[in-house]
Length: 114
Image (cartoon, rainbow, N blue to C red; front, side, top):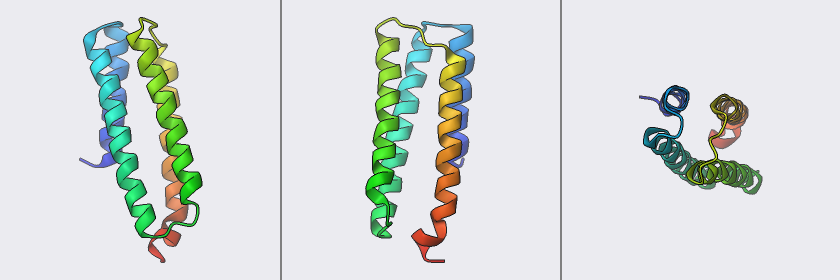
């Protein structure tokens, strides 16, 4: 399964679980899964960007770090009993990944010197 499909599958599972069983352990596990997926994806992506001498690597890495901070904040609030509005979280994840993929596609020729 592609990386993007896996990400959206996790988002959809989170949304379904958060709407049907808010406060459940499954929601917590899905948030953790999203966080782990994102961290793994970013580390892998950053490795390839470094290898390709990507010109805006530091800026790109900072975007990753900001996104991870937001994900950690969402997870921490949830663990502290603050039940997030799942539709806002899904919208946040979806908007961010859409922006991120679009941005990556624009830079593929630079990364791979096409």
